[in-house]
Length: 138
Length: 489
Image 1 (cartoon, each protein chain N blue to C red):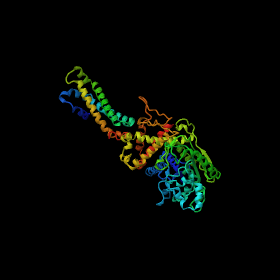
Image 2 (tube, one colour):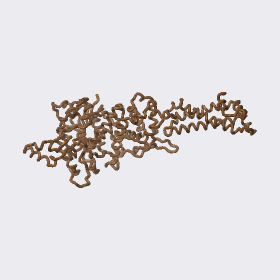
Image 3 (cartoon, rainbow over the protein chains, first blue to last red):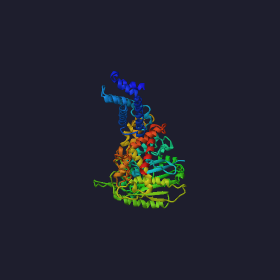
Image 4 (tube, chains in turn orange, brown):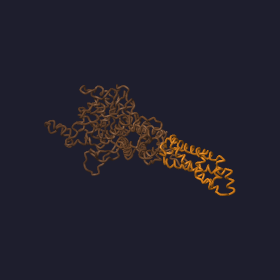
């Protein structure tokens, strides 16, 4: 979980966001976010390559699938963080830094990471499942 | 043992029926009784005849496709060979292009019989039998509706190198089919002469003992078109004489052929001769548009082989005619009799769908990121190969042209729509509608289904060992079979 935390904390000023980052860490939310990103990516890629396996405009549909993975990860991360008691308390007090903005930033980071993970997993090994998209994206 | 079917196509009609037969064989129609080699032999003194040239090109392309794609396919599944290929001899005088050379046909009739060198008595006899126009007739364009000329010239074919090779290659169990028209010149005179020579057991000719008792079938075309003449000039080919000539020839056949039972099966075919063909005496101008009854003639060949007696002792002549169920309007598959419908519908639809797929969906297939274009599939270079560009695509173009010409002719044979796009590809057989889907409905007519099937077949690895040409043909052979079955059932 430490590794996942590092991937997120890298984007924040530790002094400013220490309290919120600790809240995420203490509630084991990094693990939940990490697992959800992998599960969402896996499910969507299996659906795309194995079941949907589109023929026409397949590259565009693959990009849409990646976008879908990003959005789902964004929503999943937001949901997890909005259910974190310490963050809720922080939001309730309304002190600096802005809790909502923090959740938005965390969700956007999840979005970016999940798209990167989906891109890598598309090449190895998921496209091998496909009949019509074995060379998609390339 | 595999048997061979020798198909003699006499004159322009003979060429066009052989073309129709080639299209049937290309689409996957098979001959029964283990006849897996067809040897087309075109007899036409007009060697520059447009119909003959076109048929010869089609046959050559067919052969080249089979050569590269292999033989174990439904498409192009019957071997077509020339006499040279059968005898496997490298004879310089033997043509390797399906044409039968006729001695003396490239000159005027008078020159071919040495009219000027005859003594007065023989000249008088010739003058009695032939008109001045006959004697002066230029035979480089055929016999122009004069069977009396043709019967003299065509009697020499047994002396040709081709006839020798035909005899040498003939084996027990092989069969012969002769195509001719009864209302012209070349066919009307050539058929009885050829039959007489085939049935003569002449010890000086190789294997004539086998040939003389072989199964022989023939089709004679009764008038089915008129020739138009917009200039109102006197022309040498006059369609008003077609029926008279046909009656005279039939009367001759009655005595010379049917009473002797010298033929096993005889097919008559004709149509209301309402459609006009452009006037042409021969050469490249004689390129008549394909007509449905030429396709029916090709079916007669398939029927003849199917009904070949097990022994060759049968001396009874079977006479057959071709009929349709419903001749109102344009003919489609449902207009045909059950047997013809079953024989034609699936294979012709399959080749038509292949042609449409190449035309409308190949670009989608080529850019598809599936297995078909992968490591074990078809490489991009294939589409620039001689096989694809010079043999396969031109053959499909000939097929399309043939279908279009039958559609435009009278009577029109129009079994297919011609308005498909990639997303409506399977909705092409008139009378067999395929759902094209909607907002919430799946499209069952899209070419994507074929692309997916092609990818699946390549992914299975079943064709990994095949060469590119063979793989390409085999892929479509298999996937189109499946789709045509789905559409028709």
